[in-house]
Structures are given as structure tokens and as C-alpha cells.
Length: 529
Ligand code: ADP
Ligand code: ZN
Image (tube, helix red, strand yellow):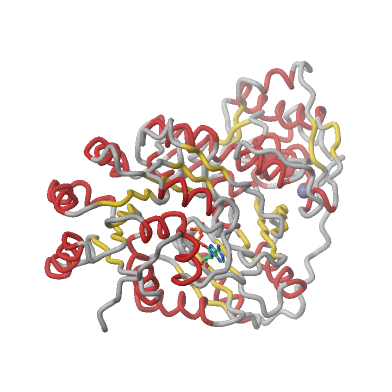
């Protein structure tokens, strides 16, 4: 490759236009850049696609010395550096994928001041030699990308990020910029504290993505629901379908292909070459659908992703927001669609309860899940709920499912009392616990084999719930879970009472529920098999 020429740039605007080829700054970019160029610290909260990278890349070009970027996205460093070099920016990276020789070359460039930007994986900070290396060159700024990784409250904690305060102590006069796309008020405060950025200026962009239409519907036949969405609204569009497990990624991708949709799978268990091919096809081609686990998408910059579909419930609102945020970066109308059901809640609770780590960690994950459930079951505008979650306000948007077809709410107090007393009878009279399916059967008065085996047709609650359908009862159960009025045990998905159940049973608390849409069977078109 020809040697990359350093570009002489005098001002930020000149860098934007001559190096990056854009006309004008977006949002707060200019202010952030000026602030940093003048040597100040900044904490930047901007949604995915907002244009965070330029906020440190341009100051690094304008200021004397090398801009050091801490990023956990090791797999993307090569691409990022290639893209910068193609623009004539002198960039390099240091991470664990390189051998000693490759590393030496970059280190020498850094020390000689032959770089504008050096990308550094956080694990490099663990070795003392990295600090000694940085001491031998001139650092123009530190950029801390994906800064939420420093937060133990967040969903993506990386212990190496805690070392970053050491850099600040060693280089107190070098300006720092921390950037993230996912931060609630609490996370933001934690980032500021841990990185010693309390006195830094905070730039908080709006998290609203007005062109994304948010829709969340109960899961009945998820693959068919998805197919119907794709056929009726997104024929020939590029999009991402997220599934929880690798197995369901592959099954779903196969099934879409059988049904005439061009789709490829993507998950960490696939061969690296297959993964790379599928990813680059997605970026290059026009209407490809990628079915993926959440391993897919970090740093993917494809402007015309028209839909993001979730076939399983995300673990947190942060994750949901980040994943759906990959839709519509070009500003054109796009869909964020999620199907979720009771089984999702059971599965995720189980994953959390059996996960490794401290009790504290599990408690945090449960809080994240509860917030996600609340978003699913809200009767308010989804966008307003999302914005509130990120500490921002908004007006009902007119572009989400609850705004477009306002869900009816109904007084579900009696229904809730029926479910809760069924659980109470089993738990207290029989010392038994059962999952939702069986409890609904009892309420509906179904004399099936399991009911007869356990003599449950003799319970006083047997058959007291015939006014609702099985589907509606499952909706009631889901919503009671979302409201914390009952809980699900991880081992068998058994429903149990919580501290607040008694208030409902005792008539001290009213329960408002969202009417379950009696969905028409999704328009599935012709099926292949
Ligand atoms: P983020 O890191 O916030 O997700 P990026 O920095 O990757 O966002 O930017 C998203 C996209 O927007 C990129 O394609 C980038 O080149 C483009 N972009 C950023 N700033 C501008 C600008 N001022 N004018 C035009 N395009 C921009
Ligand atoms: Zn809305």
C-alpha cells in the first residue's frame, strides 16, 4: 500500500469538508469538536448513527499529537482504520489480534508522531508497556468509545474500562471525550463518576428516532407473523431479524428462504468466513435479510436498513433501543417490530437466575428485564416510554402501535384475583406450583389428563374463568408479571405470588390491563411445505 499522506488541516470545518467530504456539521458536532479542540473534556450521549466518530476524529486531526481511541469493538478496528486510511487519515490500531511484528510497526509510528489516530483495545491497558509506549509519544486527546462499558449497572460492563481513570491521572491535561449511545440518567452519572468527568461538559442529544415506527405485538406464531410483516410492508427491503438462540437463527433463516425471502444467518457459532461473507453481502446488496443473534450489528453502518424485527424479547430496554436503532439511519420511514410472549419471560428469567456472577448482577439483570416488560405492556406511546427511560420527555408520537391503534384498557382486577387465587390455592392448600398453561386450564375448567391426575377439577377455582379465552388469560398472566404482581420461577416456569399479590387478592389494589388484540391469523400467503 502507498504511504498515507498526512493532511494539513487548519480548522474543523476544513477537515469535515476536505477529509470526510461532508458539507456541514450535524446536531452538536461542531460545538463538541470546538470544545475538545480547545482542550476541554466532554461526555457525549448520542443515539446510534448520530455521528459520534467525527466528534473525536476531527479534533485529533486539528490538534497536535496522536488521538488515542479506546474501543471495545476489536473486530471492527481493521475496518475502521482501513476506512480512515482511504480518506488519507493516518490511523493504526493495537489489539490482541496482532502479532508482535505488526504491533511494533504501529508502536513505532505512534512514537514518531506518524499517526493521527491510534485505536486501542481496552485490554491493552492491562499491560504496563502500553502506558510506557504512550509516554514516548504525544497524545492529543483520549476518546473513550462505548463509554457505558465502564458502568457496572449497564448491560455491557467491561472491567478493563475501570483502568481508564489511571490514564487521566497520568495525563491530566490531555482532553478526554467519552461517548455512548445508551445511557440512562443513572448510567450517565456512573460514567461521569468513574471516569472523573463530572466537571466535563455533557452533550446530550435527543434519543428520539422519529422515522422509526415502534410496534410490539403478542407472539402467537412468530415466524408467520414475521413473514406477514415482510410480505405486506417490507418486500425486497433490507432488514435484521434478531433471535435469542443460534438454533432459532438458523431455523428462521432457512424458513424465510423456503418462503421466498432472501435471508442469511449470522451468529458467533458460524465459521468466521461464512460470517464475514454474510455480513458483507448485507452491506453490499440491496434487499438482504440477516437473521442474527445480538452478535450482529455493533458498528454496522448500513443506512437503508428498513426494518429490525425481534422474534424474542430483548434482555433490556438499552439493548432493544440499540438494536432497533440500526433501522433507518438514512432518516427514511422504518419499522421496529417485536413479537413477545409469556415463554420469553420464562426463558429470560431462567437465563438470569442460572447465570454466573453475583446476586447483585442478577438483581440488575432482573431490573432490566422488568423495564423491558413494562415497555411491552404499556398503554402509553412507546416512544414516550422509551424517551422517559432515557431521562428525556416527548409527546405522543402518532408513529407507534399504541398511538396508531390505542389499546383499550380494562379493569382486570377480578381477572387478576382469579389467577392469583388459583396460584394461592395450589401453593397453600396443595403445596404445589405450576406453569401458566396449567393454571389457565384450571381457570377454563378443562378436564385434561394433567388436571385429573392432580385432582385439580376439585379445586374451588376450577372453571371460574370461562369469560376469557386461553389467549386472553395468557395476556393477563404476562401483564401481571410485567406489573410485578406475580413472579415466575426459573426451574419450571412455575408461577408464584409476590409481596404485592396480597394487595390485589385483598381488594386493596386495582389492576388495569391492556386489552389483548384478538388477532386475525396473520396474512401468511402461500406456505411452502
Ligand atoms: P455513531 O458512532 O454515532 O453511531 P457514526 O459516527 O458511525 O455514528 O456516523 C453515522 C453515519 O453518519 C456515518 O455514515 C457518518 O459518516 C455519517 N455522518 C456523520 N457526521 C456527518 C455529517 N456531519 N454529515 C454527513 N454525514 C455524517
Ligand atoms: Zn407513539
